Image 1 (tube, rainbow, N blue to C red):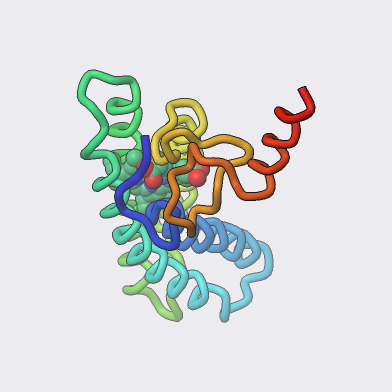
Image 2: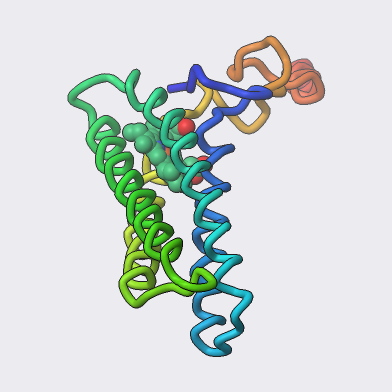
Length: 178
Ligand code: HEM
């Protein structure tokens, strides 16, 4: 079932999720390097990463919710989508809390609680990201109706079930040979 919220022919939600996912994973790596090196510049990097990640996450969640809201009731996709959405909102809130704790300390140094929150959010995020993959690759959510290996470009006005120019010529030739 295809998304109605698209940019350049592709759903907006998967375009936006790279912002929180990338920045949250980068925060985990930077925090880990900080714990080993105690380089005093690193906490500020994590602090600003989380701020932008949380804002990007809220925007991504809005588009995810719009896509989820039109999934028919009483389907596995509706319930996996609900768990995926709730779980990801919890991930964003956990990072927001971690950010708030960091904002109150000198040089944005993360407290133990701030670190526990952000590391745990990453673990939860792995589970919810799997659910996102399940929605797309198993349950067909966000995939153009009739998508196939020789579909026409998303930038064209034709539906995905149509064949791209070269492929359709190839098929016509193949049929003519038979
Ligand atoms: C910041 C929070 C979120 C993140 C990081 C996130 C992440 C993801 C990921 C990784 C996918 C799979 C995309 C792919 O593999 O191409 C996905 C798909 C999806 N997510 Fe989320 N998600 C978030 C919030 C939400 C929310 C709040 C909802 C609403 C309930 C939601 C609904 C969906 C739906 C319906 C899909 C299927 C693809 C689509 O329709 O665009 N997501 N999400």
